[in-house]
Length: 326
Ligand SMILES: Cc1cc2nc3c(=O)[nH]c(=O)nc-3n(C[C@H](O)[C@H](O)[C@H](O)COP(=O)(O)OP(=O)(O)OC[C@H]3O[C@@H](n4cnc5c(N)ncnc54)[C@H](O)[C@@H]3O)c2cc1C
Ligand code: SF4
Image (tube, rainbow, N blue to C red; front, top):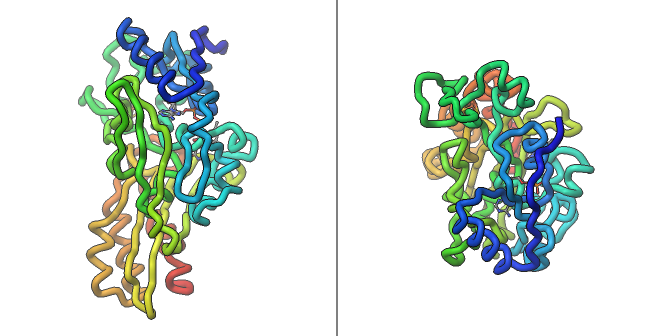
């Protein structure tokens, strides 16, 4: 299928990008941001929610800054996996897609990745053959194919790898838009509706991510389930980070991805076991609590029950470094 035509805008600074977005907004014109294009352009090729205008962030130098605690949204995944960042971030980045995609794909694009669903990530002809679905309904008012009879919410799955790794290190996300700049904890950035995806307002985009200095003291791991190790999206993912002092676990964080419409930080489940932490048994209990807390739906390659079971396994594997094997 041919990619539909669109007008490409190429701002050179954050302010330029905001100005272009404001101008398009004021004219009532819809647009998308594009960074590496490895997610957006395949969707455009399949005629999924295309827009007449696309604003490329590729020429904005200030968004390419990469330091241990400051990661510009235009830093590529390849630069990140080889960059001066926490080893957990390097591991998460190196697990994404293939070498070729990591050379183009960026941090901002990965965090803002569109949610995925096998009723939606298909060609236009395929989607027409099932009379569309709610997320790209082509003005037909089509229902959700996964949870029918509720025409409001999309439960497509968020399958980005970086978000849980950043979350367990306490990352903040920084945004710019027509109303100025704002920042928030990364776990507050995502929105449950798979169509809205995150809290970005019209014309707003991600400029960079920062990590607290204290994250240097955390040790961490990321474990991922996927069909083909060579390049597939995660079907389940668990990131863990911890800090020990004289044999005592002082801090523990767990986040999951690829099982719901948002990546999720599991502070409640961790708090339940951390006060009475006794090694392997606590880790097993925690892994079971995570399995129970996460509720995948049937819209990716592996069945939900298997993905849930694997969350328990991945949590234990992610904690191996803390326990010396369980
Ligand atoms: C075969 C294949 C395998 C893949 N495997 C994986 C995988 O294993 N794990 C994984 O996580 N991803 C995977 N991906 C998805 C994708 O390649 C990566 O997530 C990549 O990091 C996306 O970055 P990008 O810069 O190319 O995003 P783009 O395609 O440019 O953008 C993605 C989305 O984010 C929005 N966006 C981009 N930048 C910004 C910004 N700064 N602010 C606001 N919105 C923005 C765009 O509008 C778009 O909706 C895979 C893709 C393919 C094609
Ligand atoms: S979850 Fe439902 S509305 Fe969302 S993409 Fe899938 S079928 Fe469409």
